[in-house]
Each structure stands twice: as C-alpha cells, then as structure tokens.
Length: 101
Image (tube, rainbow, N blue to C red; front, side, top):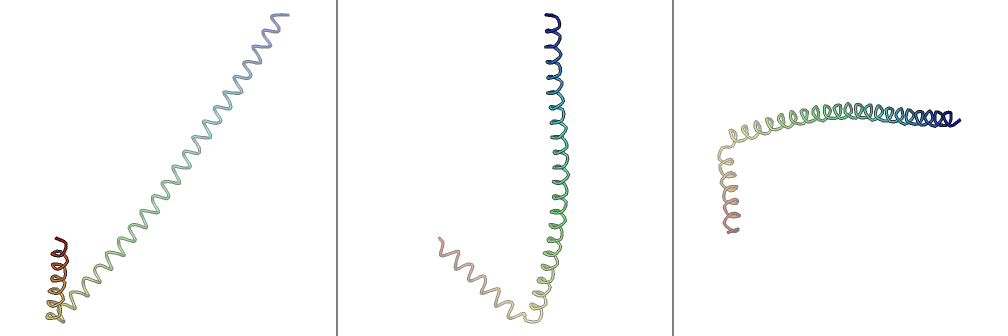
C-alpha cells in the first residue's frame, strides 16, 4: 500500500513537472515569435524612414540648386545691387559682432 501511494505521488509530481515544463516551453516559443515579429516590424519602419529621408534629401538638394541658380542669375543681371547687398550684409554682421564685445 505504501508503495502504491509513493508511486502515485511520484506520478503526480512527474505530471506536474511535465505540465510546468510544457507551459515554460510554450512561453519561450511565444516570446521568440513575438521577438521575431517585433524585429520584422522594426526593420520595415527603418526602411520606410530611410526612404523618406532620401526623398527629403533629394527635395532639399533640388531646392538648393534652384535657389543657387536664381541667386546666380540675379547676380549676373544686377551686379551693382549684388555688391551693395553683400556690403550691407557684411556691415551688419560686423556691427553685431563688435557690439557683443
């Protein structure tokens, strides 16, 4: 009778350990799957951000080229005004820098 009780107790203990082990394995598998999904999503978002950054950089480059071209054309058409504007900008900058000291 004592052997039967001991064997039943051991059997129940083994079942509990197996049950807990199975639950732990499911938890680990679930965590690994969530990690994989998160990593994929992060990579997708990083790719989208990279594409947007390249588009913004291209737009900025194009706008910069347009402005540079427009300034160059204005300087060619109005050289005296361009020199006057440059002189005034320099005088203002010097004035502000001298006042700070």
